[in-house]
Image (cartoon, rainbow, N blue to C red; front, side, top):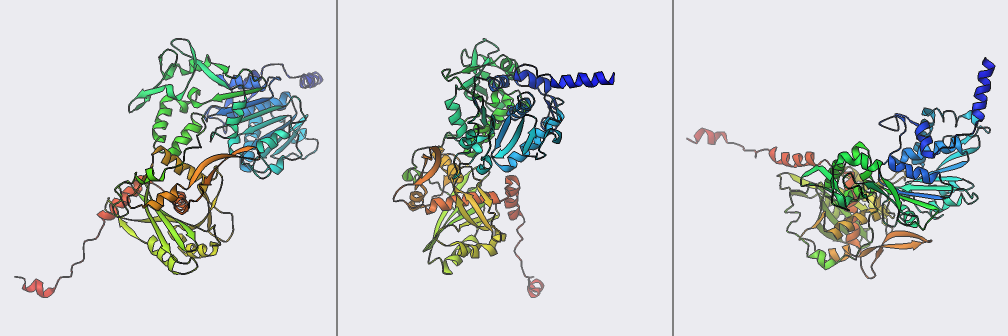
Length: 588
């Protein structure tokens, strides 16, 4: 009897996998662990994911590109696809994430999904590795291998060949001197005629790689069936409406016939939906555009997204995040040149001595030149910037006078409209130009407790606004100049979120508008950058950028800060009065 059981199990193991659609196999065999989902257990694909699964399973399709928002179940699908390929079509699989940490974290997630799914359990175990060389990022199994790599380390892509290439969040990939990581990874698949290249990402800017890949595809959009008229249409943000002040009343207006459709019909409409190729002449490259508006996720209800939009639209930075992560749309980068005269005319009647009540913090940015320091002070509310002052301190930078003048400038105090006293909360001094590094460090190091820091501007739109340098033994911070300038220019172009003091003179605006935002091709790849307009100086632009970047070093809690500024006035001690005993005795 025992022999028969062993024989039956052995024959079962030799049986080829069932020939079933990828989506059906995933739903029948993948079990999500608690660490990967709020609803662990057997995986259920949301309706629109079936089309992506069918494309990934179609031998006639070589490439699949997905431009997406968050909250649509893409990462879970990617993990399930890896499991299906390892179990049913073992081959060399390469997974590329933006950074080493991303690759490592994702490798752990995939490992946990394999352990939680009976059909995959043990597939990546050491017993299936004849070489004994499996690691977290390099998994060997019968018939193939699974490798996790970081786009930021393009050398790690060398000497690899892969039949299946899966790239996630490619708009976060950085182009290096070795080339575009997307192109380098695709080169690893050239020897396979039946290769599959799947790339997905939340878009960032309109020149980004996922936007360009989608434009090269058959450009599919998901159309839902209207619960009222039965016509099919894409759910676009322009068709989501709500009553003023009541985002919870958000509903969809059918663009075909004007039907008003409530949230409760969304699951039915999405389930009856379909993918439509808008460029059907493209046959081997399937492109999918999907956003949170059709997601069944509880946190993707139209009312909740409307509330998020109302909060996000207060500043271009948060509006960009909403556009990218909720609508799955890229952010427009290139704009017209800024007009210095138009900006000069925008000045308003406030100064450092007459601050707007909304200003809760002050920061300063300092640009260093051989014969002067130029400082710009910016006020910050919860969502707005107020450019308040531009000062120039003349004198040789290797002398003491200019630094003493700057120190006195940074120690100033002003009366706040709430009654308290406000001072400069943080200051960034540029140390990266003209051999001034040692002088700036000498000034900033003993003042670090006052948040006076040495900074160096670095290029790249994906850079953090400010981060500590890896250099040991010195307090140097790196400012993502392109990132800050992008936020600054967007606010200026939209006339939103930035205001200028009447104390600012014409030279401030002349230098503020000294650069333009452009997209240039470098080694065949579009790269956004800021270019100097010939004949213009840029000191106030740079100083303003530094003042904006250093804001992130402040623990900003608006309610608490407002109470502090008000309580300073309430806690003022009454003046001390010394009374004369003689006067008290003889006053009558």
